[in-house]
Image (cartoon, rainbow, N blue to C red; front, side, top):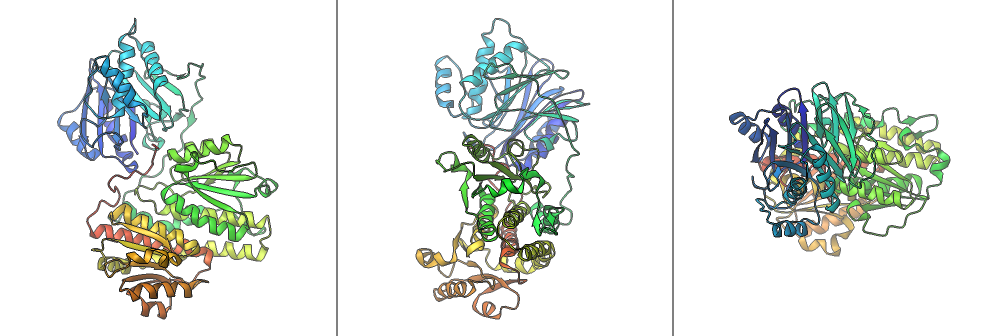
Length: 616
């Protein structure tokens, strides 16, 4: 969600800025722009749409200069227009600013600036911040770099909300300022110069070391030197740079038409990676060095809270059932977006796991900080081990799923569910789960990659089934117990990439209101493996069929009863109940994917969505 790239280099800035924005496309955006100091003034180019369109504009009308900032915008305030695209300027037109986040008191600040004679050209909260900084700088007795830092400090002291900003001023030349509160921002150092980015992966090829700015930091860069100030006015120690590991391999789509399809098919390998080296067969348990807890400390946990958003919340719900079944410890799931606004009962014996695939989800970071504030053991589960959540948590579990480009999460979801299954095994074995059952769980989990590979062989079959229902205007997804969260996830995938309304429900809730939606134009997708509630699911399917509702069922290989009852079936290998959620989500991912492709949707970059939601 929004992306910032900035640089002061030895070479022209324009190629770095465009390449960096291209690497941030997966975050989600609707417009893009650059601002470059040309040695005298600041020139800008903006476009609505993809970075490729901005690149074409710059090819036709390039900007010379080695210092610049750039941005991909995900609209929060104001429509998707070139005027609202970043960078934004102050009233003098000499200061350019890019901003991730939300300025909550922008209206009051704007009104005051208008009263003082300022003219605005956009509807954004960001332009307000540019004007506020520019106003303070313009009235400074001496307009130099120190005065610009002071103006930023003064303006941010008045700002309520979240921000990650990068700015430059024509009068201070080869000089960049960056600041952060609640939105990630990184300063990088390499042989080619100094860089800003909202994501380290975007600049990893160009830098050797990075500094992760903390909330309240203001960084000043001149190409050779780097210093940090604090918005509060407190003295700030310049943080020690961190060595950058080799950047993740940015492979193309290969034989796949979309990254999402490729990432669905990568799941056998990502599941192997999630489990590699994490089983202790002698102890029949799982091990996570990143938890940084002894078994004695883990036994002190009497309750677990899992918190996350979107797909991650659905993984948490699946994990709730799995952990409770294995460890017999109460587990609760909380929407991270609501966590800090509720008075969630927490204590030193309640462990809170903040879950996020990116590790930069603003709502989840806020939940993590609230949990720590209340004294609960607070850990993270994320795919990015150098993210804010990974750095601020007291330990955690890395997913090892690799870079996920498709906005709709697939492989990170299954890795999260497996990580929670292994956590349930660990907690169960230090309580009352027998050794033999622990070994059964290990063997089952180790069999998952091969089982998922078998399900992926049904890709073409699922494509044909999806084609039959592509004109549907609504879908119902049904599942029970640990498969209810999978129904929710299947519905979310359908909404995210095909834009067809879809809802997920516990199958047993059908007759408690949901059945009113059943008709011959609304397909119902039932997760109905041969488990302990199989007969109950059959009864629910009969209720839908009695009302002429089309039914697609995900069941177990050899189930002739299900095949005779439903319009279409997707039959999967028989597995223990604790493996079913991972196996059953694969056909739902493929079903949503093929539906979206048939409708001509932009699968990897669905409208209005962002990969990393860094604003509240």
